[in-house]
Image (cartoon, rainbow, N blue to C red):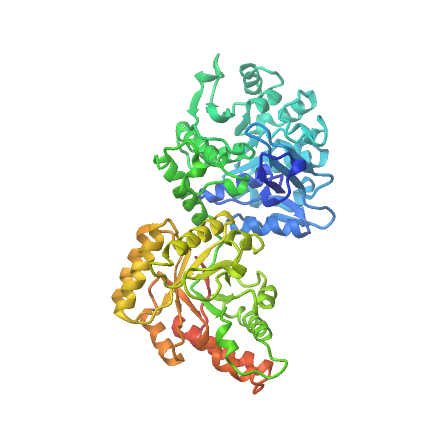
Length: 624
């Protein structure tokens, strides 16, 4: 329960906040960060907060939902805006932080926003000290604690002391971590006897204990509660005090830290607590809770942002198993791969894509005045939006020249939106407008999937093409965008061997696309070999989409039926087979907009039925 804000992180590292020129937007706020961090580690999490009934509030709620957080008690406040924090990474010790929290939504959480039953359904309720700063917020915390105790739900207190929230430093002093204050100490101690676990940094333990000496502060806290106290010590790790406070900190249960190169310490404590709770809520021994907390914190400090830096269970287990030897975690390609592939957006499965990224085939068709390819693709987008409610597995693929208006029309209203980046032509690969991939993608919405047809290279074009493919992969990884690589070949045994060879060569360069778009090979044994080849270097690949290759509809339906049921083949991305006949009639003026769209919808229904296997009942897409 508590602080849920938008973190606006400066992209330029080594700059003052005054000098930052571009930013990235993330979920922020200590409780929200912990909600996401623990969800990624496999716990079932609900979040209680308020956000503004605004664009930022919807961003926060949708982001939490994508992470698997229960948002039934995330309330849209129509009277207040979502809080925002601006941050930058000046150097390894300085992280300027500016909060905008005047009468913000999350400070208005009220007891009517949640029920005793909801809190009682959980093993634990986490509250934070940042919500003790106003009478209303503090009263709400008191009610929540009472409801938790009435239902046997344990209460975790994250001290979460920020002097700026208490008005103890200037408004631009968000980076400050300690100012002595009797008022803060009294507020922190008021409910101390009701907590089942208390967590804080040394500065936070000092303020909660009311004395600037760690052992004395711990003893002051212990005098008010028998709850275990967890002391966060940054790079030194942590110490747990489950009982009497010893004479020295190191006489507690010490969890050693992991020596890593620090990139950004903001959010490290939230990461630590996520990892710690992933053990504590599973009744693991203190040492293992500490180990998991320290490892999670180490992973978070190596990355940009707070909540997006949180590792998943897959990453954490890999790290704890000794997968990374280098202190510079940000240089680990394997860790970056695991993080990217285990934090991807949910997508439909299967995904059946209307591929309208072609331009040249349409240019060859005769057209009457007023009938353009751009307008044709806009109609495709309209048809897709009409189909989507009864085909949740539907996806679309457009170029951004003639298909730009179609992409704008679709927006994010369809769960799978692909966008062509390559310039059509022979090897070596070239990108749109001959621009570098990173320049192009800097302007693309992050939910879009980057589609690239890889032309068949020869000895003369191979080196430059490989360089551009590597550039593309690094750019999509940098922007957290998914990549689909397409290989076009006929359906022959020789082409199966060629595709296998090309996949091996591409993945051997460290390029691990999220999707492959491949011919609908008729040889069943070919698919065993293709899956094995992809999985060998790219085990987290989402799968293969089949291309139509200009086959007749009857031939394509038969090809789809032969491979349907293979989980690794996630669906299809069909273009010319679906579009060419109705497009030719529309461009020639032989049918109107509505007739074109109906023909397109009938064609899609037929192909979808061939894949789903039951034309009577449209399948419900499930997240992949």
